[in-house]
Image 1 (cartoon, rainbow, N blue to C red):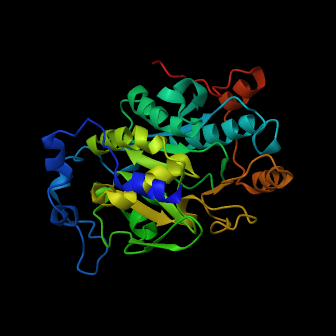
Image 2 (cartoon, rainbow, N blue to C red):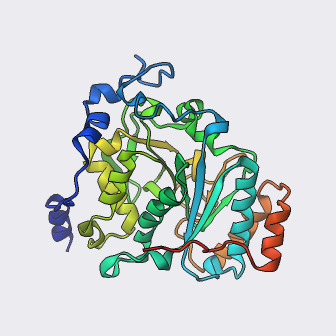
Length: 339
């Protein structure tokens, strides 16, 4: 089985669709253009320009112009982590943050986005991301968060924290060894330099690799292409342990165009874990979120969720959010596929 899997990975049949030549002119005109903003020390030069600046010339980094949609998907089971009201808690948490920072929020019913040929439901986050870009045409970034995430630091702006040039420079991992499943090194390293305007995908790295339970994707032709590639049928057919996550890891490892437009961030900047989780760094006061990655319905999950829920920063819940929770009109799993 292992030998067959390795053979499959090296004999992939790529999708018939290909980006236009204009697309490649913009984002693959040479490694030199991608690193044109690099400083001699191998980090950021925030004043530098590159060929890609023209592509994102409308993408101001000012907070007032930054348009971000938070996206969550779930499947109808309201007892995840063993807690009967977890969805109401997540709704309060996300909507309060969205109101505080001027973000949109889309909660999708994952079961309505089924891919062809019985693809496991984990893959449905990709068509949901496509739908989010379509439903919110003014959004520059889509921020995916799995259901099992609590935003702990409600005062911390996601834009200022990781998307702004300063935030990205503070948290990005440059020329850093990339870990993989099992906690070992993969032999890959993150690129040594980036220009902020070339970044289209922001994700964190833990002891077992990158985790697609919490990431941001910028609207771009590159992102359209990546979302098509991500659901390549041959990827979906693989017997991967972490299906869509392993698909992402495979794309990053074997496609330089993906590496060159991805920011791998310090884990605690956007994906800290509870203190029982050995897969990475544990949440510390001030960290933005805590992610219960890999937790099912065990008793430890329920008690850990309650513990961190009680430690989150307390802010006033908007009256409109309270009212919707009270009268049953909260938009939980309200978005469904129109296809």
